[in-house]
Length: 395
Image (tube, rainbow, N blue to C red):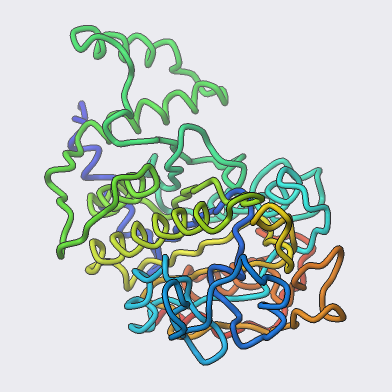
């Protein structure tokens, strides 16, 4: 008996729904380049913020043009992130400040590797998200884990089931239309064994077949959502189509780069912040019918130094801010154990101290929203402290 691509797609969808174990879809967003958490979620209630940044700052709420948007009497939202305010007010968005990875090298390469790996031990070649994916079972979809990028990111290195794609439209075997089917049949025959390479090739062919049966027009943008015309927004827009199609996504990884603001920070950071906020807000609106079962976390490798530099920017620091969004988030608040910005409070060469390890937040997300308690497998040698109460347990 032969199985058509459409039959296979239907089987994969049903299998994914049956095996979800009531777990959320996890969306992992990485702001690569070290986003300045203090100018995204502004500690305007700490006077030392303005002492450290006399020109590179976000003015206090209600103080004129460019002033921050008050969140809780101490923190303000960068006005370029204004699109996130309704989600925060709906209590589906929270922030965690003084957040990060406890590595003091100030190296993009090392800290990104640490965050993606989920451990300081460089002998770990696989990523934390891959270890999570490999520890779950029941979903045979080729799209169990997806990276919206040209290549598999380090967080998914070693994943047994992962697909990387920049766009839905571009995910295909590149060949003249008249030859593509024959070429795929030939390649399928060539890689029909059970070696690692064969299995990878077979998974790729299955993924190509699945994508071929998805017409984005069947899953239009809904509820008046307006995605910006940007690479990041287009990735989220395609991700929305994939989730709506029921193709079997359990985790997704999306990067947004460019956050290394040593110079002219005001313009660069605000443009990036608006793209991020407008894109995430559009996804939230578009996915209204799905957000109860989606958890999105955004983080960066480290923050920026407390004091501005001489080039109207900020240099590599330590702690930053994380954004978490979804129907299971106890939102409408900024979670923090604020360490302060006075000279005595800063660490290293003048950095905001980390008071919440990034793994604490991800561990709570995995536990409460993905029904996954084997945290030691995902984050080896990490002793999970008491949760912050950011997420509501799945019922």
